[in-house]
Image (spheres, rainbow, N blue to C red):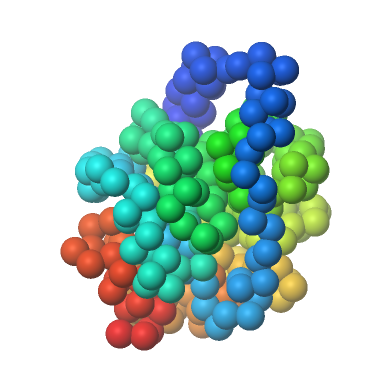
Length: 257
């Protein structure tokens, strides 16, 4: 079993322990805060930063305790982030839906629920907890699931970031109407990082799509490399949560400090 398979198995088990009835989750969606659907900042900014609230990871273990995710997100916003990503997977990343709710209340930016979305219920759950964006990992889904989940995301008013790691996965993504495509330089099966993926895949993504570089970005030089490869947005977690001053760290990645 690969690392990705193991994570998904745990995600499904945890989901069953908190699943509400259809009537209950639909009611929660009805009373959820309105979607922050304006993504124009991603198109007008030279570079956008999606700053992540991330306590731990399977590859690095514990990264930061983050006792106040709302405060951290607020500091990201002050630093110039375009959106906030919140890890909600519990077992490997130490996240929760409560983190998502807290962050959504604390900032005015769009908020991404970063998780392993493998069940329709999770999309209703994401919206009920205030998510504006969700992550769809091509490696974790069948072609039909990807298509269906993109449609469900749109139906709920949210936006989807479609994540790819290989040429084959990018081909699958491009067969669908994608607003965002993220190229993850981390192999989710081995956890190894190879930024060459940026150089190979980002130039193949059409310019009308928002192109996100994910993983392996910790310095301004890493950002410049990703931008040279075609990224107009970056998603960064580890480097920011480990920074002593997350506001300054966002500014530094943007080249403002």
